[in-house]
Image (cartoon, rainbow, N blue to C red; front, side, top):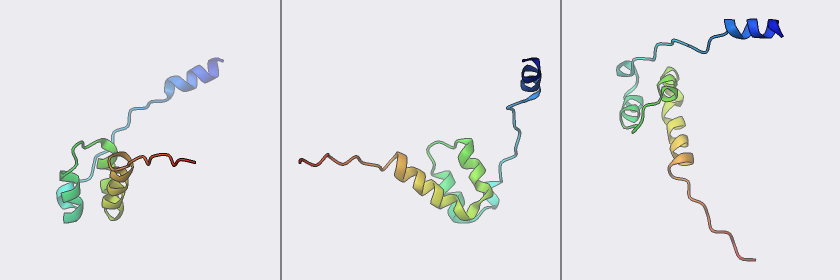
Length: 75
């Protein structure tokens, strides 16, 4: 029991990572990032993958903002 406690005490969930400089990224990435209503760290981290940034943001919007539930069909 002490071994696991000792191990957990040495673990840290604090992570310090610099985010990419969006002013140096492609225009379509900068524009999409600037238009985000909330700039959560996950989206900032996506800046390290500029080729996927816009597509992931679009997918996120489709799932969380634009999703509409269909009415159940009558049987």
